[in-house]
Length: 315
Image 1 (spheres, helix red, strand yellow):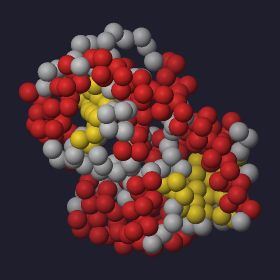
Image 2 (image 1 turned 120 degrees about the vertical axis):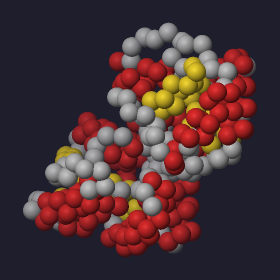
Image 3 (image 1 turned 180 degrees about the vertical axis):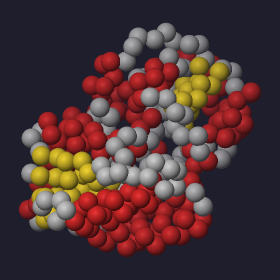
Image 4 (image 1 turned 30 degrees about the vertical axis):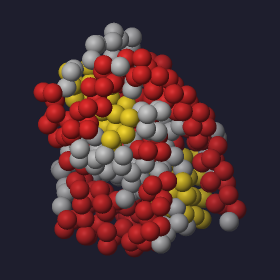
């Protein structure tokens, strides 16, 4: 089976997921090519330039069994490529993300584009049940739920690190929708030191995570946060906000702690409680590890993707 992947980048978030999926599918015998056209390397110009260059590149590509685009900017290339079937994956609600990260004006433009681009695909997929339900409610469109797992083999190369007493990790973008401002607001009241990993290579960020007592995910919006899955695998207790697909991973007081979004006082209370109650924190971490190895690894999820592609071509 010949598949073309289209993504604005192949690292972090949905782009990193696309890269891992391509790698795993190749190991399974699929012929997967990554479209990676040139982009203008200036903030706010990368995605618009990618739309144009990827769409032009698509016209000159050979024919594929499936073209699989990741996120709305990739849909234009998906439409231009000759393929038997077209797939578009969205992690989170695209127009809401643009509205939160950029502006309401760009959010409206994104919403207009999103509504049309989603109809170009033969199949739509998303990595969280929450996003699936929201898109059904918002646009009346049906998405296939295919979660984004973690590659446990990559953790084998993590260096040995010493635990740092009451270290609190934050791993994510330095942006409003990730709620980093909420953590900074309560930082001086926490019974530990916060280490912010906002722009570290993955291996370094994981080393910080592995040495920590708690990881905090204070987001205002999410799809299915990778850092939660990574923390689960490393047995680091999680305090996260009850948004998006996060509750699909974090069962409150079972695999982690959930707090309301935009509630810094509750966030403070729960972080300090976990730092104080080590035995309780360990119990949560053990349950979280069991959950992630049973549900969110490539060994579990890849067969679902294989079935998805094979059934798509039969339809």
